[in-house]
Image 1 (cartoon, one colour):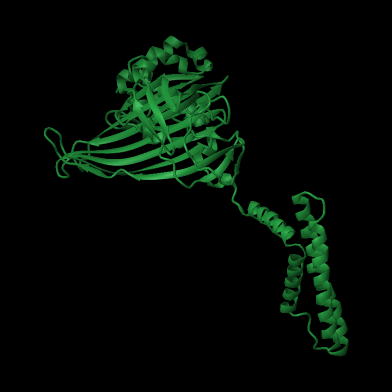
Image 2: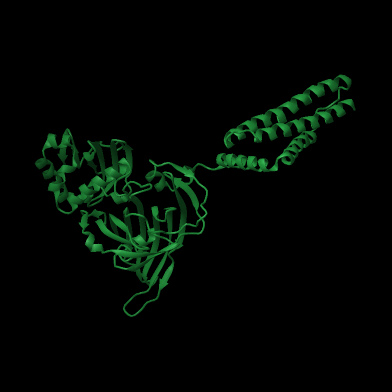
Length: 495
């Protein structure tokens, strides 16, 4: 009984001591973070470590009288901590509220996931030079607003279509359309004008790439937009890029209706909302006079980062659709995959992203160069292909001889024998070199092309092209149809 009595006195004494000590701490002239640190340290010492040590001392003393004596029950330990919390609350409840609020913020900071863990991959890459951190939602809802100065946006869109002459038919035509460009968003009185388009277009058909061509900005006119809270509306002006009239994701999809709830982050110190929108593309248009039935199934998924100041910083849109023109038994079936990306690349204040038209990885840069090289060959301009090779290849063989070999190869087997990028090449990339393993098409069957593209003085150039009838075990082996590199230049005889 003496031990129990001593234990009760100890509990009350320590509880009172904890309350007094922590009440003194919350009155210390320290910053919030320092006060929290001191409070946690004292609480751990006075309210956890000391009671446990005191309990061990009392237990040893009790066991001298009774070997079966046990230590302080968990209920008593919990009661002691509850007592000092209650005592502190009675002593200064206002300070306690402040103390608890700071503790909650510290706990929430450690409990939050890292922003990079939940960002769209495209945005993580584009914003890798900017600081990104979680943020609390502002008091005002997200809404579009007229910017204080003109904005410059860069965008890329790409559409791939596979068309079959009849539903379920094995023969198909593969086509593609890629558009890259920039435009200005110029503010007015509660309005915004999209203008000064600078656009480059590239087309594909059955793996054959055409050389890209530029269109003047006047070809796309301008669009006048009204700013209306959570949405923008086109008032006047015509542009085939704004509405879906060219088989691409339109610019209007970069300006969605803003949601009521979003995840908030800080990008480069600026508050921004991040959200995702999913939309069904399912629909059916019945046949009309001279117009066949049109049935569409698919989905659009878009990721957005919109600055709290009221305009998009980043948008990434992807749509897949299956379109049947005519009836299910007799008609044309078309599978579509459309992608588009928008970056804010110029403004007078706030964060910006790199121009999306520039390749972001060595693989993208190398593939773009090889695509331009193939386009030069496929459009009958082998004389324009020599500049795509490294200076080592050009010095070893000379532009005239190199172009003669390329012309002979194209005449004998076709440019498709140099590989088709649309057939998902195997890519082996380093920061300064990219190897592509491609499948090419000739008669009577496929061939295999190994290509190595190297970075030289900021430019990507072709260092090797090796074409084989069968896929070699290693890159650049064999080359029984065509071999172009610094120390070799050979072409197989005509079949």
